Image 1 (cartoon, helix red, strand yellow):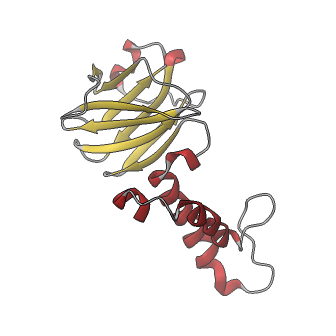
Image 2 (cartoon, helix red, strand yellow; image 1 turned 180 degrees about the vertical axis):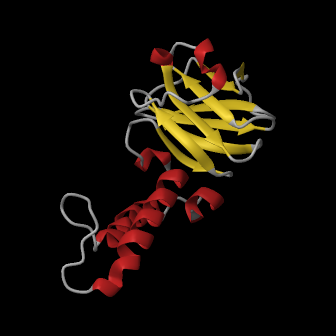
Length: 166
């Protein structure tokens, strides 16, 4: 976070290596493991996940090349990704071909900002079924390409249901 806030990236490589410290309570298959001492539960379930989520949100290049919500200023009440869309998404969901929906999410607040790692730039982003404009100021979305995939920033001022279209 220091490098992200100050622009000083001289500690970046060391910081990525330090993420390994958060995995000492993780088994080979990725699940949290406590072979001898159960009091370390907070390290496995609290520190490990929290450190990785913060790191991926700060430097999205660390996140898997897949579609993932990395951070939000609101509470995500529902998130459905392509292939796992629920039947009760929203009453107006019939207006769009579900085969083209990469991500649907619903937030608690009608305003906020989400950071989403995507495999590729979306063709459209809808807020409460209305298209958002690609813009750097105000309500809308921005796209930043990475070597693999990219980051979508959605800025909402008047809605809580977001659809990201392929």
